[in-house]
Length: 388
Image 1 (tube, one colour):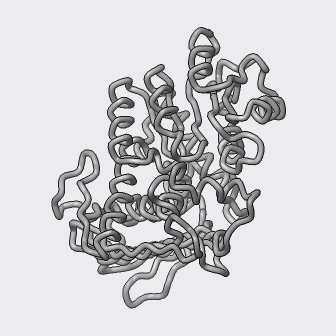
Image 2 (cartoon, helix red, strand yellow; image 1 turned 30 degrees about the vertical axis):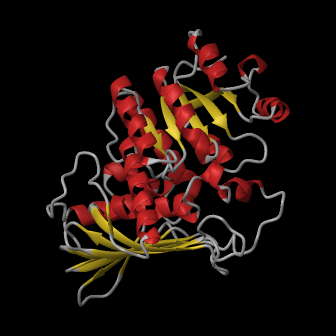
């Protein structure tokens, strides 16, 4: 029996052996706003059924494929209202398109699709059907990331000069074993797309920099490498960034750097001050005014605004982390579905912008680092007026 007060959630992917599906389920449960009631958890029938059983899904609502899920749920008064797509990249587009066409809200892993054309199709469809498409960039759910964005927006840093962002990992520093399911599809161009490390974590770094700075990226000069012998996709990316405002930036993402576990870090530098935040120490934000001591900002109730405090669940000093940040996306989407605004959420247009970024980086790399221009994000003109 499902609760009428919870959003009825379906899931595509995320079966036994998957990582991100479990994260989505924990995030959806944290504020008790969703109930997982149906899904297609694996393309393998035995794993699909076993996964549904573990998750206590009614066997009649464990479907063989996406079309069966849509057909089976659309005829029910208690059918799913939103679907989380947590599959490898190459399956995102068809599943999201089918769900949007059926009038369902979509929660999708990134990158949203394999190509910018596919992303634009989904963005147009979401607008046409008046349905939400949440793209799960969870790092923007951290309260101090939102605080950094607010400080930049109100001018605490002055005119922005530089944005440096890096996301560095070691988990693919060697060729993975044959049973490493997470590495298997990420290193396969047919399933991951043309971008390896760039698509997997580079999109997170880029989106985080855009979210905090508010700047529009004009062009990139990039160098991609496959440093592990025999690897078909990139595992290391260096890129120079030019913004329409005149600000400069650098991006480094790598999955082959020994000693780095999950090193997502950003520095935003303005004329009056700078900010620094690192995901491995997510409950502190460093603010450094010109000619003054650095200040450590934490999740104190008397510092954060009410809109940011909505995503804080426990008192300051008690550590919050990745699951809570991820849950803030689900919480805000639930608010949207109940009529409340949440304009900070990554959406279909964010997905389009991310695919344009990937495309520009790939073009620049193919041209030996020549500058490649990006189209402006949806709703923004290519002017110098985006400076906060």
